[in-house]
Image (cartoon, rainbow, N blue to C red; front, side, top):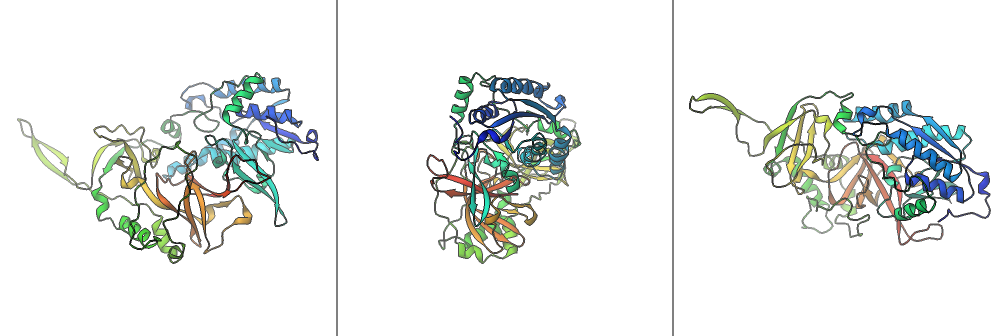
Length: 484
């Protein structure tokens, strides 16, 4: 497998910096660039020093650097090292702390690509003479002249199980102008095969996990570097709470009012599908009417995007216990919920989380369905079909909307159909995007589990086979993104 060569371009005159991490993906990317005749050099970046925060408790970056240097030597390219730990802490880690403190859940991998790999790292590579920067991402880029302007397009990777375009959802056209993704057309199995054939030291190296360039961490312990633990209540919310809840009723009635079929039944609960069952869902007819959506006011859409807030008051009562009738206090029975445990700080939990709750006595899994940072309460619900896990609409504030395809920006009042994902590896979901003065609203055809403030929503457009795009069947192009 080789990069496609343009007979009109002398690749040897193009100097490419490969971000060599020590993993198999970037190693094979370096190999393919070298085989294609580019003037290639490797640059390894260190972004983290504190080994005490990782579960392994050692300096993983030292081993990664050693492997990366061995790969560079094997491929036959110069190897350089740069320490970007100060930039990484300021632009990624400090942002993470700030977001978690506000009760939001950021995505450090998206931030790392926007703020480090294609910013600080890119600038360093350019100082070393690079014309382009390459990474081992599983995605594709094509460059075209559209409307008299050069446009860089990001397409999903050819491997349906490894598409990493989502992690690049905040890149700009300027950043993309320098980007290369050599393995975007290759399956992961092919990458491993090429690495073995070339006898690269990273051929059998496991894929990295955890926070980008930090490693696998215990997140609460990691966050406690700056966020202090504070004990609070874990409140289980029962189904009864939603029966007369005004916000839940408003969401149901509003979604019902925009159904294409009058008198139809709106779906409020997500069908549970494992995150890795599929890459792209089959396209189906939208259950909602575009004309009816257009009639919703900005205020209606804003409220439709708001989650249900939980406000359950627990009263105490005294009773006598045991032979000595000792007076004790307990909470009265409450039809809407129950205090089922304690936690160390609401800021350490995220919507949809089920690990680390330590709550027993339930038939089905327990999930976080809400957090109240001010009151230091986390709210949980039992089962994948709990009403608090599902939402159909989210909002991206105007200042948080980012268009990769700047030529396709939506105007206020415009409505479009796109496919959307709200987390990496989630199957793409059919949705209607509505642009208003108070934000971009995404109304999903089907309710979504665990919509999480602070995460990124990325929207894609389906494209057909074309001579300029090497695809097996059909593919998708990432158009834009925004913070939920």
